[in-house]
Length: 121
Image (tube, rainbow, N blue to C red; front, top):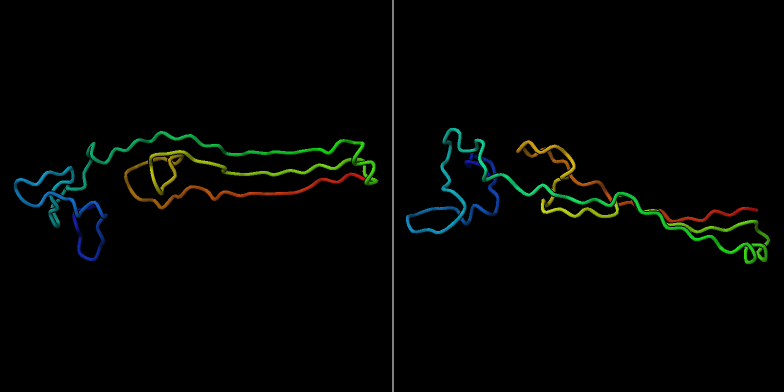
């Protein structure tokens, strides 16, 4: 949200802005090109709490008796997930980055899943 500089788009919350006496809203009146309307305010504070499960690795080794029947010394299967889950109230931006009040287009990292097997002969 911003003061409405020409050629820029407003956030969807601006449809709920204060417009006339008697309006009940938590979105202030929009004043085009009014100095300091975007200044420091507790209005822009959001819950920055987050919980991140960065990596999960699951593996299973077949019993040696079974692997030896397949003429192997060992057989292991694994699944690895990087950036498995991020719980946060902030939508879109990465809460693990510093928050300065400006949009720096820092998004949460992609989730990556790897599946594989280790075979020992």
